[in-house]
Image (cartoon, rainbow, N blue to C red; front, side):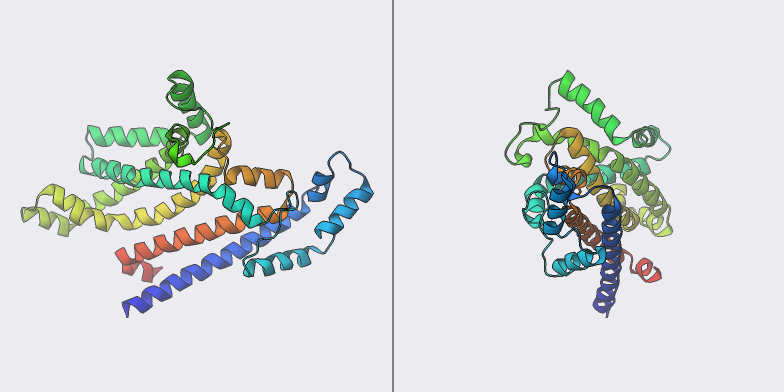
Length: 319
């Protein structure tokens, strides 16, 4: 019975996510289509002869009605075909997968550092609430969270790359797998992690304080169970539900943050592909990126919802 309820819960979340992605795809296509200029103008470049541009629009199918273009692209999407880049002529799927590795590497490393840091700082602040450790962690979290990513990136580059020479300021000229070159990814990952750690650790702290003040935890302490075991074995699991749900939103934010950070540190990934797609008015490539980001968002949020439901089924039923 519990398995059926969980499956129904997951099915509803997936259906809602798919509907949201389809809505976003329609909006992005409409907005991109009404912007001045198109891929034919970009391809023509200096040879901006009206007849040449008209021929390019016909060959690229840009002279067809917008609904027809969108319908054809959606039909291809249902068959796993994201179309062909109007500018490069390469399949969009190939372009995305060739740029996916650096983006996923940065996002995965950021998540791997984020979770233990946020949980550890949140638990330390909650256990020592009101004390110097709590005040130091809380004050630092508020201060760092107020700083924008690009400002943090500039400071870290100025200090650790230019000043101390410990890391590379950008990835310009680099080759090979990003994961094997920590001098290239340490600073970008640090910039990505700082703000989410601040918000997530504050959430863990608040949830842990509520749990530690609950009657069953106090009773466990009165029974003589060591405080460390109570904190990590009894209080922490019950405090993770809001943190897990917030982590899904953080993961969504990381996708957007990676795009910005890739541009700052010149890391060739999906961020550069997005910039090129917008600059060249390559609608097929732009739509492929939106579909990919939407798929990742739905997967991350669905997994987080299921984990939160398993930890606290009553919250899922209430929602």
